Image (cartoon, rainbow, N blue to C red; front, side, top):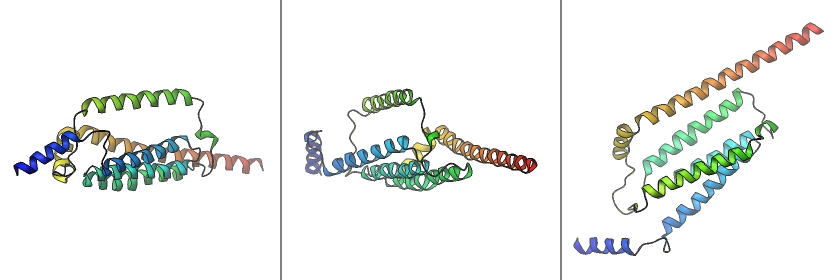
Length: 199
């Protein structure tokens, strides 16, 4: 046992950024694919294509969780985000009768302001994560940290409020889509009645 522990310690000490493993290389490649899909999601003018590219981005995050030995989190990502949130977005597009093809309304004159805010938020997130986990390494050969017991303990002890806030946000998005669809239907009915009255 002592020799195994010493070998593991030596491997950890010799490991560095200039000698990535196969898992780390795959993690980087999948991260680049997810990043590219996220960029296309927010830049495309076709709303349905944006939802489909969002599937690619969220699916890439699920693969990242698998590479970090967090299998439970990966399947939650697939079931909830890829399976539910994207379906909710597509239902919202259908309920609001959004255009299927290219939409000029999908573009905004505030592109540079949005880009500035996005870059600032990304820089802040990268700085916080790097500062918090600078010397932390995930032991891919050790006990998995993404099991249901560990995840449930962390979630319901430290992240209850954000979890509930997210559920309320999704409910508000669904109710908003229904309200917008009813307004559109009423406006169309009013226009139809006006045209019939003019005839």
